[in-house]
Length: 290
Image 1: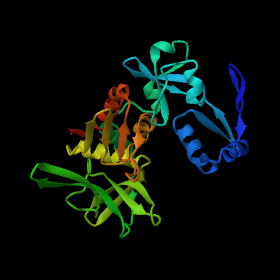
Image 2: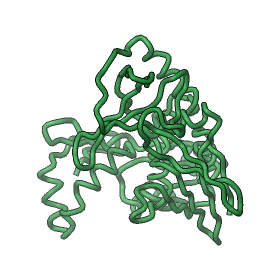
Image 3: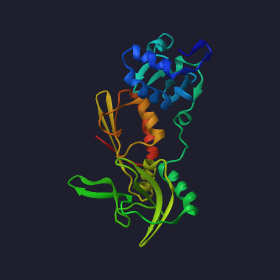
């Protein structure tokens, strides 16, 4: 629908997309499909209901393999690149067969800033220190913490939301991550300092799960990621929903386990594991292999 010629694409209005989805009997999937295409950076919304595909390109995964980013159907791509395979929401291809396609670095495609979780959290907290102000704390305000329990096989950790001042609360230089309820299933997340009877409120935090990983690492209470290998499938279990840059790679290469709240993923592409492991290390968590 967007094809003009080999090197030119045009915008497509959502009503035309809806018509095609309706003809195929899958109109209920259109919103989710467009969200995935945008998240994987294969298409971009232009506003006013218009969408346009992004240039077809290769994102290097290392080891002679890459992500083939583009809106073309897999069957069409195989006419030109025989090694193309589905992998999660994206496609993987051998890079020696696509030397003439544009390249994009994995870091740029993911939108990662190059910082590990603790370094990012430390930078965010330090830059927010001048923005703290005295505030009235609502009764329902909770702060992020970690509780450790001992079992027969050793200690296990669980992330918790506890009242300010609780011994399980995580903080760095007295600054912690707080949340306040804004709806039945929604919260706002912000930095804060609890000082006995006084409370200082700081700026909001957009990537609250990344802040949780960072605070845990700064307190030397790194969270645990489980990796289980079974035949041709690797299962990755996260203690929290993945931060955006990591989640983009997980969506591209893995299948989310239903009803796991995006905490458990299955990868069936062995070539993708080195890139996944390297990205998981950015969370500075411990890894449990099974």
